[in-house]
Amino acid sequence: MVNKNSLSVVILAAGKGTRMKSKKAKVLHTVCGKPMLYHIIKTAYEISNDITIVVAHQKESVIEQMDSYFTDLKWCVQDMQNFPGTGGALRGINIKNEKVLILNGDMPLITASSLDGFLTSKSDVTMSVFNLENPDGYGRVIIEENEVQKIVEQKDASKEELKVTTVNAGVYAFSASLLKKYIPLLKNENAQKEYYLTDIISMARADGVKITPLLVEEVYFKGVNSKKDLADSEVIMQDAIKAFWMNNGVIMQLPSSIYIEEGVVFEGECIVENGCRITAKSKIINSHIKAHSVVEDSTIKDSDIGPMAHIRPDSYIQNTHIGNFVEVKKSSLKGVKAGHLSYIGDSEVDEGTNIGAGVITCNYDGIKKYKTIIGKNVFIGSDSQLVAPVTVEDDVMIAAGTTVTSGSVKKGSLAISRVKIKFLENFYYKFFKK
Image (cartoon, rainbow, N blue to C red):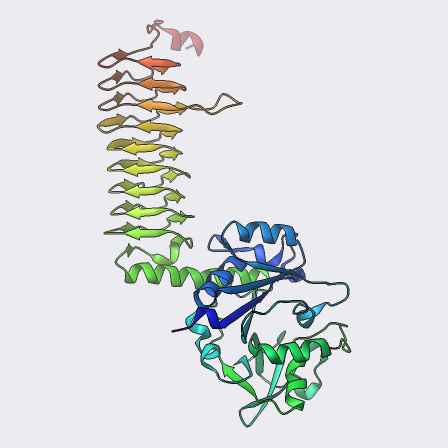
C-alpha cells in the first residue's frame, strides 16, 4: 500500500504537441470523454497527495479545465524562452517529499498498478524502459550489467546508438535531493538547445549513482504524439472500460461497437446492445439500452431505451419505455411510454402517461426555453404539439393532431383542435386532366 504522504508527483504538460496538428493544447485532447491530462492526474491522486503540473502552452486553458475536475493541484509555469525542454520544466518546482515521480501529460493509459515498480524501488534513480522492434522517435537507453549508463535522444544519437532497441518510456522516480543537486547543473549543449531531464542520468552516472532500469509494459506507457496515437489510445482505454463493466455483470452485445466514456456508471442488471454510445456522468440502473441509442449525461433507471433513441443531457428516466427515434432532452419521465418518433424537451412527465408517435414539446421560442408539465395518466394522441409553457393536469386526453398552446389543460379534460375535413369530388381527375 502506497503512503500518499511520502511521494510527490510532477506532471510535465508544457509542450505544444506540434505533431498533433491542432490549435488545441496537446494535453487537452480527449480520450474517452476526458482530456488526456485528466487521466494522468486521476492516476496520480491514487498514489500521492502532492501533485504539481508544469504548464506553458495555453496554460490558462489547461489550468481552467483541470481545476474544474480537481482540487489542491499545484501549478508551475515553465520559462520556455530561457529554459526550454524537460529539464527546464523542473526549475522552480517546490518538491514536498523525498521521493519524486515524474510523469508526462501525454500518457493517458498509465495506471496506479503500472507504477508499482517505481514506488517500491529503493534506488535514487529509477527509469522506465521497454523494447521496441521499431524504436523510431524514442530516446535510446544504453544499459550494461542491469544499470543504465546513459540516455541518448534520437536527435542526438550516433548511428550505432540508433541501432539500440531499448527505449526510454519517459517516466522516472528520483530522490528529491538528487534532483535539487543536478537540475541547476543542466546545460543546453545539444542540437535543440534544450535542457534535457535525461542529462541528469549522465551526470548521476558519472558521479557513481546507480541508475536502475525498470522494464514496463508499453501499453500503459504509450505516449500520444499524433491523432493516430490518440485514436489508438482510445481503443485501448475503451477495451479496459468495457471489460471492467462486463466483469461486473453488464451484458454487452458486440462490445467492440459500443462506446462508453470514463465516468459512466452501471448498477444492477443492465444490457447494452450494439452500436450504443453512453457519455459523461450517465448512470444506468437495471436498464436495457437497445441498439444504436445515445445516452448523454443522464440517469436511466428500471427502463428500456431505443433502439435508435437519443437521451440528451440532464434527463432522468425511470420505469419508462422510450422507443425508436424518440429524443429526450433535460426532462424527467417517470412511468411513461413514448414509443416512436417524439421529441420531449424541458419537460416533466408523470406516471401512466402515453406519448403518441410524432408528439413534440415546443420548448423554444427563438430566445428562451420554456417548460412543459404533464401529469399522471395523460394520453397524448399522435402528431400533437405542446407549446410551452404549458401544464397538462392528470387524467387528460389530447386528441391526435391537436396543438396545445400556453396555459393549462384541466384534470379530466379532452383537448381537441381540428379543422372540419372537406371532400371535393372528382378533384383528382380535374387536377390531372384525366
